[in-house]
Length: 309
Image 1 (cartoon, rainbow, N blue to C red):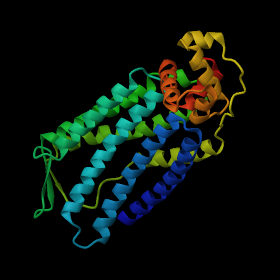
Image 2 (cartoon, rainbow, N blue to C red):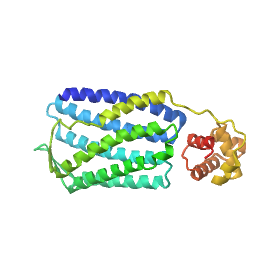
Image 3 (tube, helix red, strand yellow):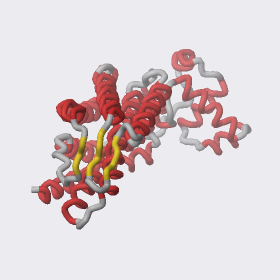
Image 4 (tube, rainbow, N blue to C red):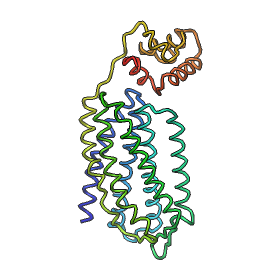
């Protein structure tokens, strides 16, 4: 039965790698921050599946499977699962253009670091090599609760402002992501009570079936189809920016010139040469433009200008 489960995970991982490859391709091609952040989330969950398969494979096929290896892979699995949540929070805040998203992301990242320290501390998870067991303490329980609460925040953040992108081409993309995340949340909720009452874990190849791998695989198939038909906007042929857009964001004359150069597909070096300013000055102006408009990349800037928002 374990071999069948490993084979299933391998199939799911192959689907995930295919979806991830095409997502990364478009993230690199468009330099869109949302696609970059999504690719990170999807890659991290794929790594969760890889670690699960690795643990089961080693237990079933490696004689005298090292307890220390099991301990560190288990710890890495816990760390990556928490990192998925932090990355997903950052991704969703970027999609919805939430203010102070960097500060919020850093706060959750700090929580991740604290929980990781607790997990590997003497009050967290302590390995008994001779007995081939891990003793779980209050540090592990705190980490489990923090993970669940962070997961709750992530889902609330995902569903709360969903109306903001309801009429856009990102709707199905985000809904699929949230369905996938919701199954994982239910799975986490059902396992939380049990994990809080466990004090000793014995070396075993049975890590339990990851039910969220099913929507993950289905979402991977959706992503492959989605990105095969992904729309890449061509550079805008504009000679002037709307006055309403300029006044809304307080764009200066110099910043307007730089935005027009970006629209024309000019690089930072080209802009510096044509406007007779330094490359550092161009980067400073772009940073100020991104901050004013609330974007993080050229692609996002072009999307804002195209929409006139």
